[in-house]
Image (cartoon, rainbow over all chains, first blue to last red; front, side, top):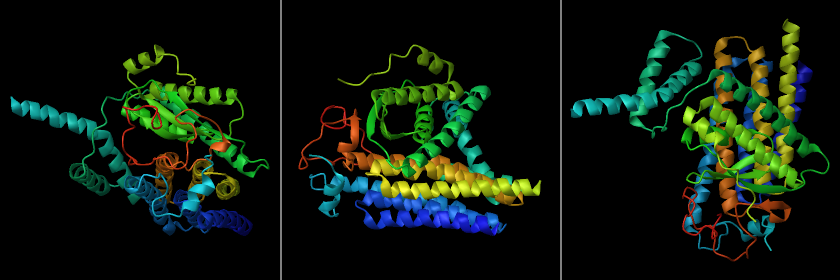
Amino acid sequence: MTVVYWLANVLLGGGALLTLVRLARGPSLLDRVVATDTLLIIIAAGLAVHATLARDPTLVPVLVVVSLLAFVGSVSVARYIGGMMVHSSGSGQDAGLPDAAEQRTGGTP
Amino acid sequence: MSGTVADAGAVGRLRHQLPLLLWLVAVWNLLWGTWSWANLISGVVVALVVTLVLPLPAVVGGVRVRPVAVLVFVGTFLVDLVRAGALVAWQTVRRRGISSSAILRVQLRTDSDLLLTIVTEAVTLVPGSMVIEIDRETRVIGLHVLSVDTDEDLDRQRRSVLLTEERVVRAFGTAEEIAALQRAPEPAGRPS
Amino acid sequence: MGVVADVVAATCLLLGSLLCLTAGLGLVRFPDVLTRMHAGTKPQVLGILLIMVGGAIRLQGWSATWMLLLVAVFQTLTAPISAHMVSRVAYRRRHVRRDRMVVDELGVAPRSPGEARGDEPADAAPSRGSPRAREG
């Protein structure tokens, strides 16, 4: 079980590091939303792995909270960005975000 | 006279809210983790308070649950879920990554809020597709499809969405909706 | 019995962790928001379900099992919703790489970057009056 514990934690940690890379590199706010969502779910998965292998059910309620928090967080940020579109000055670019974000992702000629 | 009308309204509203109430009570009991009469009663109280204080628009239209069709739907959904996870995971680790994606529009045939919700939830989790736009009035959904290469892939995706819809309607729809499925127009092709 | 259950649980946990790793990998490798959303949604849901199954096998006591079931149900219900909301905003704001796209039937030919766009709230019904002006 120790091997399983370390292996699972290495896999989850690798996944969490990769989402952190995406979180840091952006380029747009929505990428970061996706990365945060994924990161929270990976954290929930890590908690579940620990609870399972240690046979310790005290962490299980935390799982419910974390998984719901990921959902509420990404939905509210998505709605917030959707609301920002109303106030953007009509250029269709990210309001309050660097222009480079659009230029790097947008392949529009 | 008006009393009976109000009564019918209240009863009808309660009937519409009943699935929500049951779901809330179930969640409450699952959160407590143990079953007891105290949990059940307090769950009913909390569910009533929640539905009265924060009312939701009732989901219009009755729901018929057909057990066999529900089993077929759930089974296919689980198989699809596993396939989707494995497929996307494989596409991330393979060397050439994903080839190219596409956005499709699919004309659905059901006209019920609940069924459309179930269909779109299922479609988002089946292989390779994700709903990005829903036009409620014309019943058109926009799908983002991961990794398509040829036109056959696109047609396959479109057919699989329509099959999912058919399974959902057979599981939860009324008889009229199943009939509507039969005489549905040919799915809209690609706009030229 | 105990050994078999442990092996099954450990297999579920490892597979779930592997799927979480591929979700992170896809997040880094895929080119735009929509494809990243695919990577963040599907392996993730399957992975968390597998981990929940492993936990339900190994943890004693029904209380924890019910709660894990609740997490699994919430996850399958909410992941599509958040994926849909994020990707809808992403599509409307053109965080989409059209050079990697075969066909875009919702919409819209590539347009010039300066064109007015993105002036509708995320919940607005699609415009009926001018079908070709927006997503269609």
